[in-house]
Image (tube, rainbow, N blue to C red; front, side, top):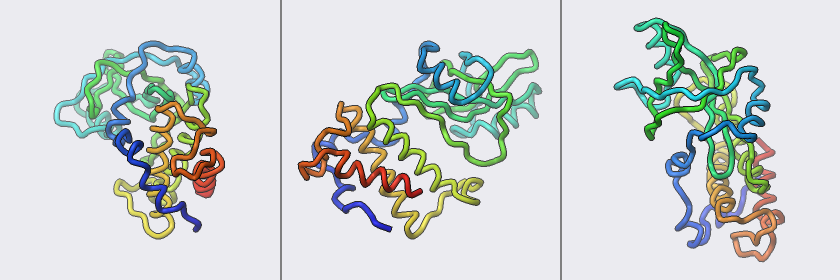
Length: 234
């Protein structure tokens, strides 16, 4: 497999200083304040027939972070009610995103998000999806570029490629990720590319900006081209 030049994974110091960790980047995702046109477009792409609704967030004490499916199933067994599948909707500076999710419906018919998150939330925006089925495997997020910057499209393509690698075959049902060989190398490269594309877009750069490697070429004709080719190969 043809790899990207090694220097790609060690960006210039000016970029490294501003390169966020994935935790920090994830922390920038927030619950939208309103159901705007971008959210409507995301809902249409998901294909659910229900309307998104704001739900209170009341995490179960002592429950693990982000493990919505077993948490809700346990709650149903102990308190009644039922599990409702759908999508939690997030918004960042660059995109809106739907994450496959489960919430608890109380015996009185109230929907509540009971899954603890890394950062506390007062509410979530939830899109019920009657057609959704949980099969014990990962489901890819649905993302919409809200900037008009094509670098964000590249960022989304890289996210999708990473998901395909991480969930190929039986890995889709496995909790621990184990990669080797070309897949491990590609995963590392794509993870770094995801971080770089995000910070480049946040800095206002685009496909026509000078490539960060210092070649003098436009990003789209230099490392941008290589990133896209790598993402398309998986």
